[in-house]
Length: 121
Image 1 (cartoon, rainbow, N blue to C red):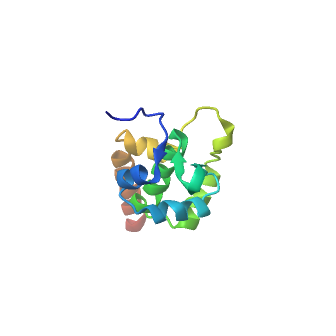
Image 2 (image 1 turned 90 degrees about the vertical axis):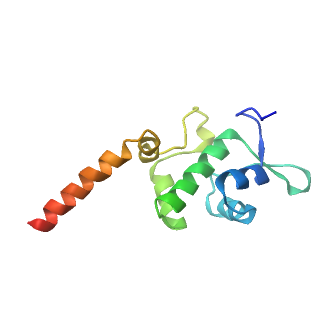
Image 3 (image 1 turned 90 degrees about the horizontal axis):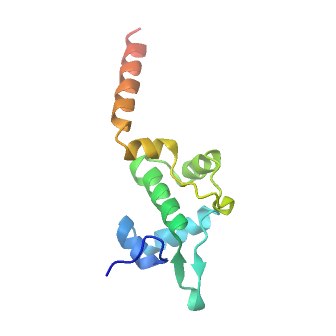
């Protein structure tokens, strides 16, 4: 039986889902102050759905978009995403949302076309 999407997830589950080692997730907790999983007895971490969304975006920024940790921190700060707002909004950036909706390819084609024109002139 699979867990509900809103159920708390362990560091092992998130690690396996993202394809990164648990120590990477613990490191991200140090570097991204908005990432704050629940910690139970013995220091066991339990991630809420909003933590999981944020981890997916951090993973996307670093592994797919090529951001550095510092760059990802700046990006998330600029996106003005604060988990304490509790407004139900996603942590996903507009660029990430477009990528998930398949619009990114056409956007990249337009950018490449503009760059070719700029280099030709």
